[in-house]
Length: 275
Image 1 (cartoon, rainbow, N blue to C red):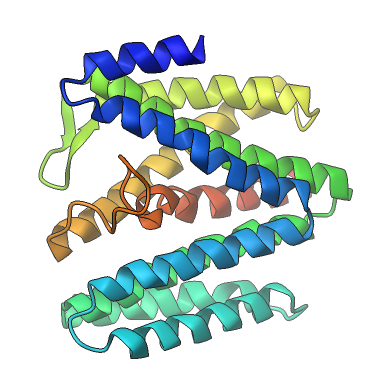
Image 2 (cartoon, rainbow, N blue to C red; image 1 turned 60 degrees about the vertical axis):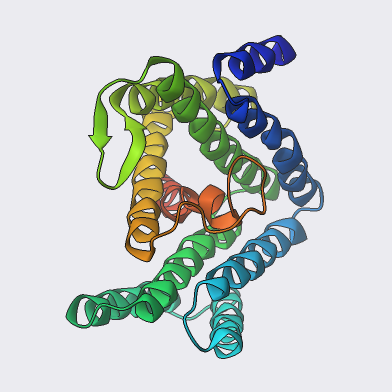
């Protein structure tokens, strides 16, 4: 059924781009699956892989100091990993605070260097909450299940928004920022994410049906906003994609942008619900 769906979608696209994008997920999902299998080390390794690929992508667009930018990103990632393992009050707020400060600096003096640094700060802040899922006050199998849930819902939300937008989308949401974003794509993603959240959450025995439906819809909206935020950054930098690392998708940041908001939203909701 999946193969037939991909074939039909590919034929619906005159250039075959749609089929290329859908097929690329069969290369992305195994990476997440390996990280899940080798839990609890897998999430940390996955975070490092995403961050390294991201800073290499961003360095391609740095106008001057490519190597110095990469070393600064490496230092920030090291700090982030150190904070993730530290039992220090306020550790979670350090990188988000740095991102806020950088956003203020960018607002006062716009420039590509400041924007690139802000993007990496935002990525690190989001990835930090992926690691914090392992600090939830539940048993390890449950934490592992929530990790799998996060990446599955985030990824399938992207797929659902893309497919429903391509097939049904007419009304644009933010034409000047991201011409491909449509109301049909957004609604399709919310519906699909709610259903995936319900089915997966009940199968893994994570929460009640109403909670899972609401959580799926909330994560879909968060993923959409993360994608839109990074699309605005690409527009400001004059880019279509951050790189050509993933055929039909672009770079790692073109896929991890949703995670920047879905991870903290999931962590915040779970911390609130577990109290």
